[in-house]
Length: 79
Image 1 (cartoon, rainbow, N blue to C red):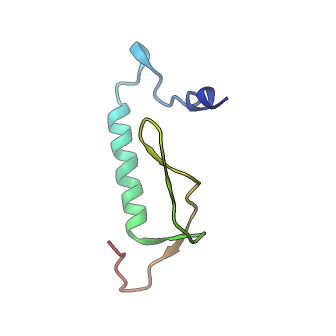
Image 2 (cartoon, one colour):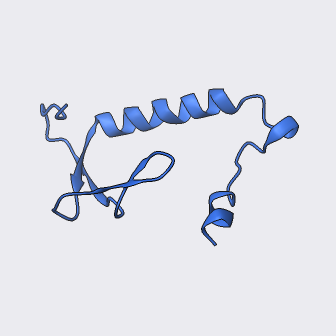
């Protein structure tokens, strides 16, 4: 069931039992991910337009698969 799958992962618990460090952990995760990605190129595995589906927020209409490639020496990641 889709609704159950969305609630299958609660890494910081919920409600009054929620982890007090969850915001710090999310920030740290974003910083580490940004540092890793800054030294690599993310390239699409599949070509083609990705459409959007309207949910509570917009989501892609299909999975977006990426491959990770190292930057060549002296190369700057595209913005």
